Image (tube, rainbow, N blue to C red; front, side, top):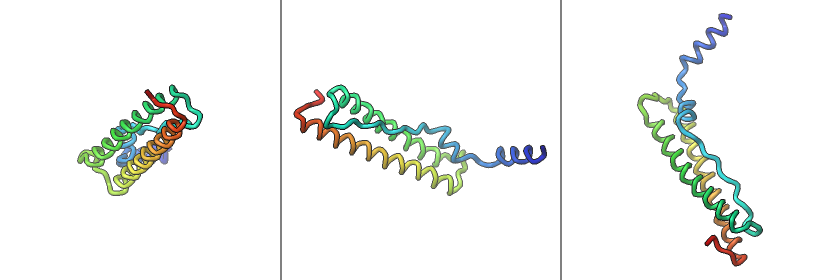
Length: 117
């Protein structure tokens, strides 16, 4: 029992800076982009909206991470800052990959003589 109480005390006393990023910043997840060779116009329109929302949400997520890292109340240690920046960089890579996938799908979609109009 003493061990459990001591372990709980250590957990409560440990700064939760990295958890703070997770608590304060909502990480978006990239949508699945349809195959432009087979997608319908409605699917491509929906995908475009999902991709644009993901990009917007990613920008907000990245800004949030930077605000948390720069917040003096967080008293973040260097390892927690680096972990936060890694999350930011991973999200940026995902954002770029999703945008590239959509652009490739759109190119294939348009090659079929179709438009999003």
